[in-house]
Image (cartoon, rainbow over all chains, first blue to last red; front, side):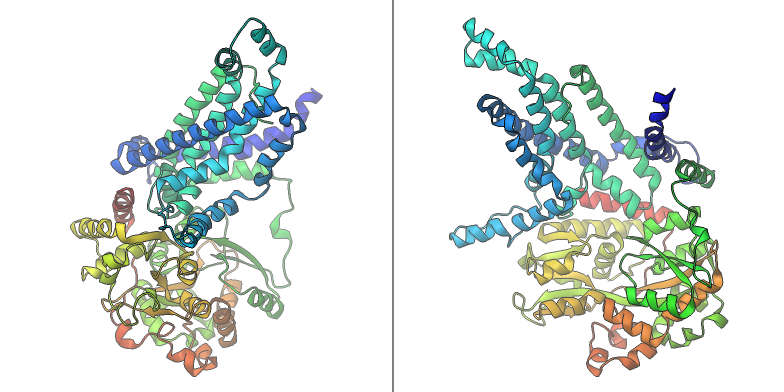
Length: 270
Length: 354
């Protein structure tokens, strides 16, 4: 009984901040302005502008997730091999930027990629032609990778560090090549961490609207921007909620994906 | 039903949070409180302190970013405010939907200071000035850098379609302002509701997109000051600040005419204390308070007493007080109805995603 009481604060939190808001989103998403039940807000995802924004968001989220994985996995392997990871210093370096507000960090990227920003400043100093960096999909991917990379590094690193070295030694004894060790031992054993990292990068990348706003110059519309605008400028909460519900489907799919591969919760980041 | 659901959920949330803090009703100044709902950073903090000292009314101050964010809060009545400061078209919508109460001008004698010009503009969305008292007003125009673009070469909205300024143009990331520019360029009213014209305006905006550097809101001024862009659409209230920081910037109201906007004090029907609300509005209409507001925000003032306190130079500044013949070509935004809002919104998204 007393254990149940301890869960009380969390339960209240859950009700206030998850169940109630979710209930409101479902209610708004399934009604129109007059309060009548409708599916129109859900099927609105097929409107060309919405579908295109969703497609672009999916594409950019997949690209940034892949880049994060490509950056994080080898890093995890190196940390494991060199034992640098044991001291925790390199991981600390990765967490360090997270101490700063991510809006500020994104703003910094704005300054770096700007037409007369840091990168173009250096290029023009070297007498090279300036690059058009800001307001491109690449700039948005850059921002996503920078902001969400730690969420990939931590679970991948955690799971790799937990793999018993004797497993690798045994494989080597039996004559496995480095390649075989990587593909037959390390990668299969680290799947929970990889999957956890993928979900943790993919979901925020898919739904972000701040990064495309700041680095996309308002010229590229992702699904997150559309939902944001329905609430703040379009004044149609019903449509915004309906589209959010559609987004939840994608998030649920990735959660199921996570649950399937990470049964023991080994890939947890923290 | 809708209101019921909103209340239900709000109550549920409030109920489960109860006990986390004392009820806000219990505290207050000697003459009670006034609940103010306003744009962020839109009243000088010093003014609030003075009001509290002089009237003994405690100010409870909440902020919002856009009219559209404010509206559902007032509509649902989930929080009851005494004074709100929406813009023109939103006031029209609130009046239409019966959310506002008439101001008792016996309690707001300082309303006499509000200029004839502003009363007339105000009259177009609030006939008879019954519900609203102007706080700030201004125009929308073009600010450009004379180092990059020769002075005098920008005269018209059409200049924002000039390929020579590719990657130098900043547009406001705001639906009404963007369509106002397109409509004015086409020689139409900014309150056009004809779908055919709307589609045409959208095409015009899509055509402009490659030349635009960014669609931004408040940061437009920073990009112009920092010279990341040479020409941008800006609210006249930002002009003085920009010119202080970068003296090469010149403001022009395009010859086709533009939008005049007003932000005015209104009192919601479900307010808690109407006298205090009127005391606040009356206080804000005082000449010296108008001057403090002007110095804090640098927005043009509707207050003739405040104008008496201003320097010759300020009064002659066309960015602050445009000449009558220019104002004659400017219009106030009107509320176009929910159906039109949705239609605009779908065209806007279409334009943004192309």
